[in-house]
Image (cartoon, rainbow, N blue to C red):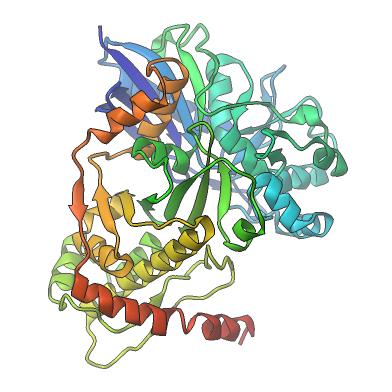
Length: 499
């Protein structure tokens, strides 16, 4: 009998369940919207009961026609979303607060005054942010001083694992996003937790990614799960995706192309220094043992594309219309500069108040030119991060493994290769995050003998390749260095004036 792996991905806009063969072949997938809501005060939240109901529906859908044995379940999720839950009563003390909700900005500003930012970064791999679990906990306690009594802070992955097993646990990569977990020691920062008036019992047990939390409890046969299946918190969604495509060694980087674009690379485990702090990247424990990951992002990458699609037509341009417009533009650089900061900028100069810009417009420019300039701008921002990452880790980055919806746009991939002078690999993996979650749990439950066996399996795939055009690369390098980089500071300085 074949063995199957089940992956569950709790994303910002969608929840997915996927059934995989042990070699990574996708057998069945089910997807539903992850509906966020607003309170009367305009605060965003997810309803935990609603989320759990959707997850059970998805599991039932992917298992309904399957007869093979499911040996493990791996759960991944967006990093900083979480809730308070009382494991003794099964009662949720709060809604699930999403990573993007800004109710905690004032708390985060106060928190900043209480810490040494460099020292805290060296402990956690993070810069202080309103997104952190610690800021959310302090905000909740401000609203109700008793809310943390008998409660545990759980990420959304931890919550789903608890519902399946009745056990409370998390993994290193998600624990770190609380801003209260030391990745240098792999334990909770008890002095910091006590300093802010919280109890250490508020935080769950922490294990390496993919470690079994427990087993599926009785009563889930109706949705296709037998009692005794191993359940694991696989970890941070982007890091699970990195595992699925084999990004575990320095010099190879995951480029996850979605509404936001995320770069994920790896480092051999080491202490973080001021050099890493100044890079603007975030760091954490990789899903693979004895490694760290670094991460940076373009918050409006695919988001910029969607924005311009809606502006160029009374109805959204179809992707086919976009392709046709781009096909009419010469293959050489447009000469324009686009800064993709519609919702602020990320690494290496994080600034939530940064503004986007088009520079170099002429009356002869058409829709296709604007579209291509926008794609070039996201590639310039990618190159900005790539160079910062090379400097940070003293290692050349010449290979990008691209996944996500953006990989369907061949012109975009070619522009990326030309701007970065990198070789792009596009693996035949449609759901990298789901697969990474399933594989991490498979590794933890012994489906794979060890990490080497799993990575060997991943390396056998046949990827598509995109190589840089030398002539265009040289032109783009000049535009990047003498234009895109040169104008960074003047633009940022202008917008900081608030005119």
